[in-house]
Length: 102
Image (cartoon, rainbow, N blue to C red):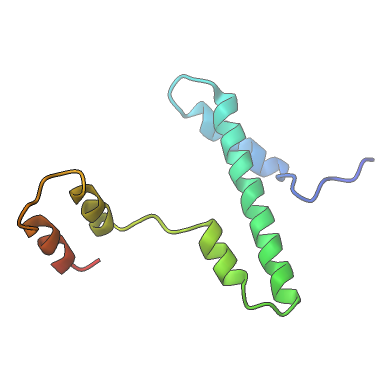
C-alpha cells in the first residue's frame, strides 16, 4: 500500500464536501470541492508550520498565523474605507463612523 501524503483530507471530509457541492446552485461541483480542498490543505500546512515553530522555541507562530489568515475588516473599517470613494468635504461621515464602536 502506498503511504498517504500528510496533507490528504480524510475520506469523510471529502464526502462532506461532495454533499455540500451538490447543495450549491447549478454549476461545476468540482470547483466547489477543489476550493474546499485547497483551503483545507493550506490550513493544514499553516498549522504544521506554526507547530514546528513552537517546537523550535520560536514565539512567531501567532504572528505567522495572523499574517497568513488575517481577520476581515470590521464593518466600521469597511465603511471608513468606502468614505474615500465619496465626497465628504466636511469629514462629517468619517467623524461619525470613527465615533462608533467596532
